[in-house]
Image (tube, rainbow, N blue to C red; front, side, top):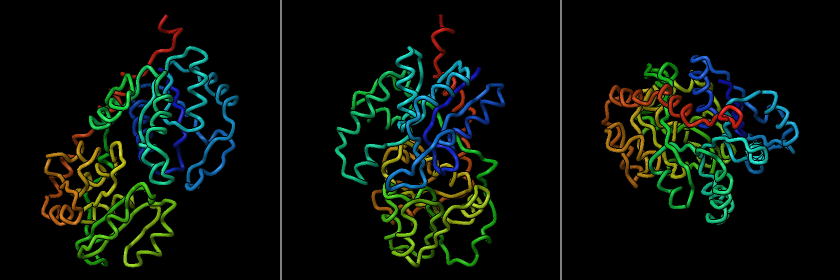
Length: 337
């Protein structure tokens, strides 16, 4: 089938949403589907306020409609609630075209962390965005429960995965110059990730932070004893993860937290807060430790076997996620008729 995905999050951005669609698309195309992305790369853009790494499309509707029609879609999926997402939503509603959406990101919590924007207002806006979709995909039972309480409809859970060929165990000698144990955190360096909860921990050895983000220059100045890598490509990231000892995941605003699976696939146990995302991925699996005391969780995780962590991570397969995703896509009205 021809699948058109409209997303405000796309390369060169580095985040879980981009990783998700890259990995799914690989499976889709292997199965003979055609996937067309409509992204900020197709438009004039401006930097997102407070987050310049993210480009926002300017006045996208007219060109977006042309691109949508030119893609000749049999299924339309709107991935994000940005300018492109809203423009695609408006067009589909006006034309009576069924579409699916996905709730990837807790934007209300992000807006509250950055600007103290009231949660009820921003959740109301998110609910309005997703309301006309035939299906809204979510990643965890916790998100399902949270959104149901906020009166979101037609929610459908889909499975996630990890690419075990990229993220795999490797040599510890890669970081032999750093004192051990090495506690690592990787992902976007942004205020909503609660990184300072990790950086302020009194831990032995070394703290290592992998990834780019708007908060990186500030945190590098504030924490000179922490090793910050900035952006690194996937293969190097995997080597750094595999050479570390424990991943500490301090975020409490994740819908899933794909980076946890990536770390575990590299043989790292995860120390995290008992919140949505970690509760789903780690839970009682034994592949990590959940505790409101992150230091306690990090130290306890040192005793967990890396082989066991990888085995647990590889139970999450992108092929399963693709099955769920394809099953949720809606045929366009003409085809259904």
